[in-house]
View (tube, rainbow, N blue to C red):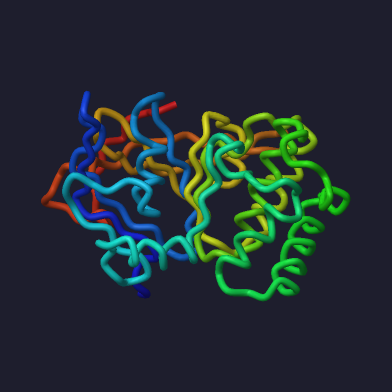
Amino acid sequence: MSAPLIELRQIAFDYPERPVLDGVSFALNAGDRVALIGPNGAGKTTLLHLIVGLKRPTSGRILAFGAACRSEQDFHQVRARVGLVFQDSDDQLFCPTVLEDVAFGPMNLGRSATEARQDALSTLAQLGLSGFAERVTHRLSAGEKRMVALATVLAMHPDVLLLDEPTNGLDETTEQLLVEHLAALPQAMIMVSHDRRFLERLSTRALKLGDGRLVEARLHRHGHTHYHTHAHLHALGTAKDHSHPPSELPHEDQELD
């Protein structure tokens, strides 16, 4: 079995006013599409930021693509291969036009201006945004900004996608297009969302974060007479049980939804 793409080992993280994560361990493998759920303030966004080095753990180890990540240089390499779509698109979009925003990442990776432009145009076309290249970024609607923010990440051809509330601001039609596009992508993903329908349609695994602990869950999909499935999440165990590695968590059969 190949090594995990991303691995967290006994990660703790504290804000000055409160602890957030306490001994969190888990592994993201190729092909995983992980639904990360939990109440507001549980630390879901913090966990994503820790993976790409925007925050540093109080204790514990982060490994990416088999290498331990300690320094800013280590995380610079991680950010070249792990694309994070921020919860607030305005945190991600800062260039005057959509084309400049989407081409920025490829150029930052060392591609020529011509190559970066082609990557950007191709990515916009794949997302149904062909006419957006010369649009002024700050004049886009919230939903349009969400799609352009995703384009800025996909244009870099990452190995892993971290999606923080990706359906915020999307109407039903645009969300359907987003789901179809994400479903066709080969990248492993971690998806933070309160949109349970979105998670049910895309996830292969589920994790619940709460009280500093990460609980791995199993998705049970039951067919019905209509043409969709419901996912029921049952807790298998917590990463605070240090007698079990992340892949061998004990069963608890606790209903989460």
